Length: 295
Image 1 (cartoon, helix red, strand yellow):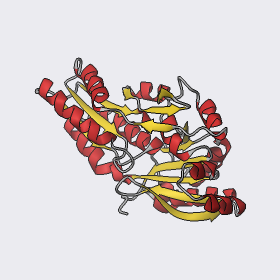
Image 2 (spheres, helix red, strand yellow; image 1 turned 180 degrees about the vertical axis):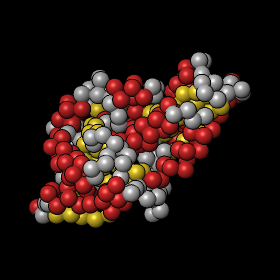
Image 3 (cartoon, one colour; image 1 turned 90 degrees about the vertical axis):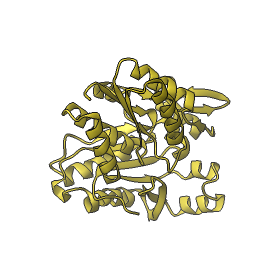
Image 4 (cartoon, helix red, strand yellow; image 1 turned 135 degrees about the vertical axis):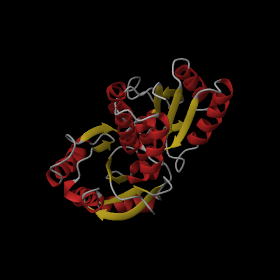
């Protein structure tokens, strides 16, 4: 089957131009800030800069996933012109979105019994999810059938590494993710938590690093330790950040020096409004293909 569509949700944190270039339609999550609901529309309605400034001023956004009807509408719009669909969702380890998409797919199959519909739990988030979408789109361009691509995604999604650090603990404190005393002590000692996404797609704190310069080196070291092929890594590398571009660029510079065979420059994206509602400003995330995540 050649006439099929690869689809994603907005939480893959790629730019609108990138999604368009890949030919991947997007369904939007939502967030609420100061009592008003907005679509997670890749910075179109509210720019990323404005969004993070609102958080800095004390706003506490909440998020809502795509519901079953929204997924169904999205799927049906695609299936009117395509013979099949593969939709990738945000990790089930941090969202119930996958379950909603599965229910919508069941309804769509009843209406379109002759069409293939796959829903894939990416077990990924932010531009790690985006790296999977990008790679899958390239495989589709190479001529993979819908079954071949579905199999490839399932076999390779745990090879995408996600490493995050945060230099700003205020949002974690306001959101109740850490205590006020822990935030105060962490700020005093200049502690930057280093986290990753495990094999179940859950965000796991791994270590506490003291100082921004040190954590920037440490996150780059994780790629040196785990990247497929070591220094001969020749695939893509994505970084996303929440209103801290200079920190993201510092990580990118180390990566580009350490890996001279990268497939192009490191791609730097903004952490979108849904993922950013939970991280707040000051977070940098690094994504690459490596050894399979097993813990």
